[in-house]
Image (cartoon, rainbow, N blue to C red; front, side, top):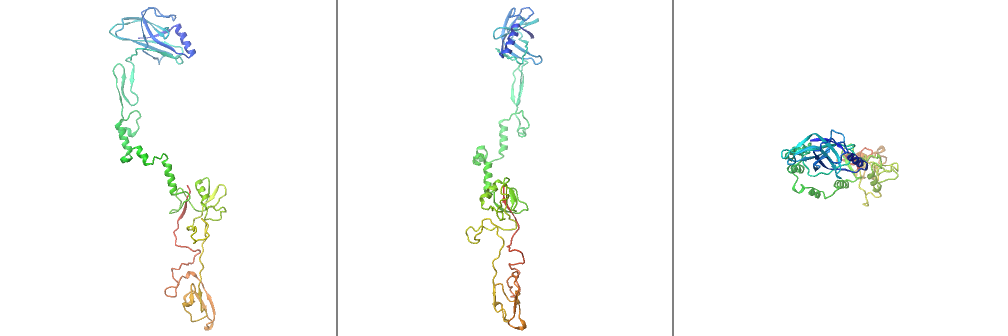
Length: 415
C-alpha cells in the first residue's frame, strides 16, 4: 500500500534548515496507527499509534519531481491492524510527514505480509542531503538482481536466483570482438599456447625471453648501436646499382647540409680527411664553411691503400687525390749509321727501323747518314717473329694510364 504524505510544519522547517546549512535530514522510522483524522500539517504525533519500524527501503520516484519513497514490510505474523494513519519520523523523533488512508487498510495476521510505502514531496530533493538509517532490511519481490557484463542469470528476488559466468569460447576469445564475456583458464591457456606457437621450452616464458635478450630493457637501441658499429657512419663501399641504397650517399662531390647529416659531419671533423681549402676532391670539402660540407669525389677513380709509413707512396697525404702518372721509359742504341746492324745494337724501346720502330735513311748507300726516330710506345714489345709488335702491349693509344677495372658506384654511409 502506498500513499502520498503531507509534510508537517516541523518537517518543512527541518528541510529548510538542512538546505540552508548543508546538513543532512536523517529519516529513521515509519509508524502506523488507526487514528481517523485528515492531517493538516500541524501534527507532531499520530492520534493512535499501533507500531513502528526502522526504514527498510527508500529511493526516489522517477516519475514524480522531488519525490522520495520510504517503506517497511509488515510480516505475516504481525497484526491484525486497521491502518488509517502513518507517519515518517527523523532521528530526533520528530514527525516529518503524515499520511491518511481512506479507506483504511486491513492487515490480517498470519495470512499475508504487507508493504507500507510513503511518498514524500520535498521542496528541493536534488540539493537536499537526505540520509536514511534503517534496520531489518528486506528484499521485496519487485526488486531485481540483474546479471552484469560477463554474467548469466538474475531475476526478481522473490525466489532464489543464481548468477553464472558467461565464458567466451576459444574462437570468440581469439576474435576479440565480444566485450561482455569472460575467459576461462582453459581458454586462457589456449591463447597463451597460440602466442608461444610451439616455442621451445627454454623460451616459453617472459623471464626466459628476457634472459635470451640479455635482460636489456633497451634491446632495440642496443642492437641498433651494434649494427651501427658493424657498418659505421663514414664507411665506404662499392655498390652494384646506379642509385645508392637507403642510408648511403654517392661520393660525387655533392654539397650537403651539416644539420641533415650530423653524425657524418662529426666523423668528417675527426677523420683527418677534411680539406679546409676544398681543392682536394679526394677529401671532404668545407662547403660554405658554416652550414654545409662536400663529399669526396669517388667517380671514375680507384682507391689506394694509405702508405702509412711503408715507403711505396712516400709523402702522400691521407685521403688525398692523386692524378695519373707513368714512370720514365728509357733505352739506347749504337751503330745507328751503319748498314751492318742488328737487334743486338739496341736496348729498351729502341730497335732499327726494319723492325718497325726507327726509320733510318742513308744517302747514296753511305754508312753515314741522317737518322729519324719514330717513337711509339703503343707498338708494344717485339713479336716472336722479330718484326711485328705484340697485341698485348701495355701502352695503348688512350688519354690515361689505367689498369683492368669494373665500373661501380662508390658510396659512403651517411645516416
